[in-house]
Amino acid sequence: MSEVLSLFELNNLIRNVIEGSLPDTFLVTAEIASCNVKNHCYMTLVDKADGQIRAETGAVIWADRYRSIARTFERQTGTALAKGIKILIEAEVSFHERYGLKLNIINIDPSYTI
Image: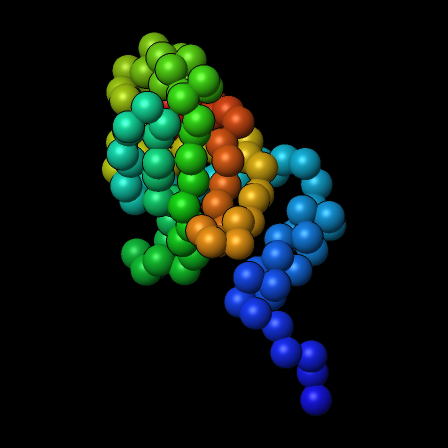
């Protein structure tokens, strides 16, 4: 029989495995399913096939990066970051014991969206 773990202990183990075995950043394409700005920009990103969602995750652009990223994106694409837009992001994968898996967006390539 396996060792009994608390939920926190299990999630801490998952975090250590994820953070210890993945590259620092990834380039990821996704569609913005929701976008909510409150200092930081919180998004839900999805990947669809034949109109059906096949993957979904939360993402965040921290406030210190958001202003610059949003300004550059809007200037180059003529549109603000919003639901329904397909984007190419550079992101770090993070896992928090309480909040689960999230992508921390480092940058967005506006040329992918144009």
